[in-house]
Image (cartoon, rainbow, N blue to C red):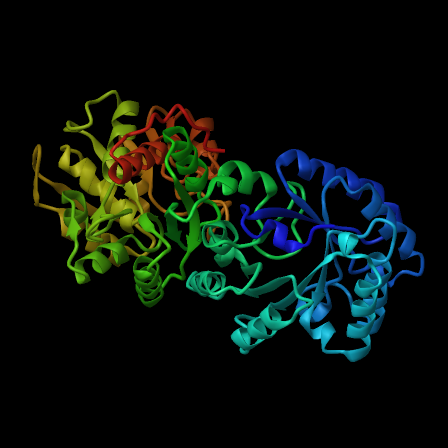
Length: 540
């Protein structure tokens, strides 16, 4: 049987992890592996952490290997390294050894480096490998996992793996504390002395699971659509193969992404990757969760931008970092578009591919005013005579307040923290606009029910999936909405509590999807020079 060297120059393999806890679950596990193959997986990882402890495990394991629709990795992951196996190293080694010498051995066997430091366990594995003729001998994946964070002896362990003649593939995985951890995983891959897997786990490690392919990762792991996965942060097979087109990633692939906290709700990766594919661009767009503080934002963006081989070409920036982006670009001597200068917040970072010069832009303002004006049956540059309530006082709220006031609307900013509403209003009120001096004032919660508004715009995260209050609406139940335009900037889910509430009370409703697609298309145009059609993609 060919060993890992066969794959050394090929594209990064996609392995789908499938857990099998009991013998009676073998048949459905085989069905799931067949589904993974149909989705585009190259390898199946049989995770037998609990099955390995059962006295009748042997027959079930042999059936998994015999009927596996894909080349198999056989893995027993210990509790210490994030798995469910709580037995002794020698017992785990004996199960793996029996699989190695069976009639249909796996293509790969994952053995934890810690297990190999147990002499009896190591001897059992080595003896089994030596007893199998070379053409059928499994390749050994020697692995190290740290669920707490970066292993303290990471490079020492890697050198030991790379220098071990029985180690065909070295694997290290650790829980990312920030997106910057991914960059060290790429450094590992760039320094590899043989086939290597380097992954960061958790939501902040998705970058390594996808873009490891750019740096020559031997393999990356995925899950099926209906499973949680065997490690935090695993994308699905279909996401890796279809959304991220992992098998077409090259060492020249450009990287884009969405920075925010949280970003799990974002449909940016769905939309932008679809557009990149339609345009034939060698580019990928990924979620990049960055903690809410200025310090986290500055440190993360600095390292991502300055990385010599990552190829970061542009970013979407969402809550709570839109003001941070303007500050960041200003500190680095970059440019800001008119909207960003006026608002003090931006949602788009453009990075010049030649000079690496930075530019902050705000596509929320134009996209938002276009969406609102369409519902009001007005021109987007003429909202004179209308009163618009902006709910919220953050970056997107200021963008929409500026856009509406610039078009002549009388804008009232309402926020739970009244002082922020006052600050937002003062920063815009009286400034020159297209239709004369802007009129922007701060209102209090009671003013929502005054009956004097032609439109409400929710610019808070209320109602957002995975946000601080996914079940809440910013408008009280007793506010009359008949005939009023109600626009939500939250787009996941599309039918937010506010959208449902407004629809039931006779409002003209604008969901966040239209604005999201408009602002995303404007971002894509800034990055690529081409504005894609918003009807060519599905957000969900």
